[in-house]
Image (tube, rainbow, N blue to C red):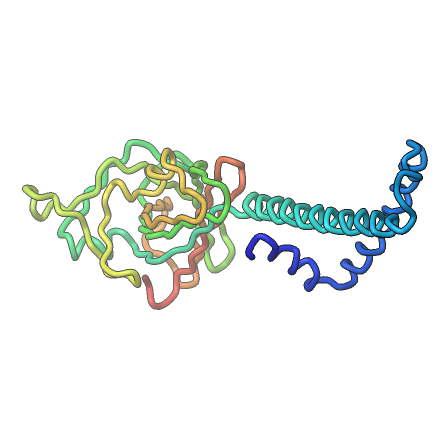
Length: 257
C-alpha cells in the first residue's frame, strides 16, 4: 500500500497540475497512432479494440508523467537540502564572560597561563585579559575553524585590536599535587577550563560535523586597558574551511558574566 502513496499524493496535492498532466497524457495517443500507421501495424488492431489500446497508452503516459514529476520533486528536495547546507555554517554565541584576573583568582588563588604565541596583533603587553565561554554550532557542512581575530570597541566608538593567546596551560596552583582545573558557574551548569576545551586549539584540527555543537573557552587580550568599560563591545571572528566568517559579539553590561 505504501508503494502507491506517492501516486495518491500526486493526485491530491495539486489538482491543476494533475489535470494538465492528464490532458498531455491523452495527447500521447496521437503519436502512438502515427507510429502504428508508419510501421503498418494500425490495421493489425481491430477497430473496436483501438480505443482500448489508445486508452492504455494514455494511462501509461499519465502514470509515467506523474513518476517523472515525483522524481523531479525528490531531486529538487535534494538540491534544496544541499543548498541549505552550503548556506548554513558555524554559528557562535557567548555563554559566560569575565575579566580573567578578577573572576578566577579569588576562586583559584592563582591562575597561571602559559602563552607560546598569539592570534591577532602578535604583540602582548600589559593590558586586559577577558575570558569567554562560547558555544559553537554547525548547521552546514562539517568544518574546522581557523583565522581567529579579536578586537574591542569602546563606548565612544574607538576600536582596539586584540589578541587571542595560544594557551599552553591553565590550572589552579592552590594544590600543586592535583592541579585542579578552575570551575565557574554558568547557565549550563558548572564549567571547568581544561585544555581540550580551548576553542582555537580544539577546532583547528577536530571538525564539527553537521548538526553538532561544542562548548569551549578562549582568552582575548587587549593592550593598554585595565578594566572593561560598561557598554564596551568585544568582538571575535573566525573562518570555516570554506572561507565563511563567523562573528561573535558580546556587550559588557550588568550582570557582568
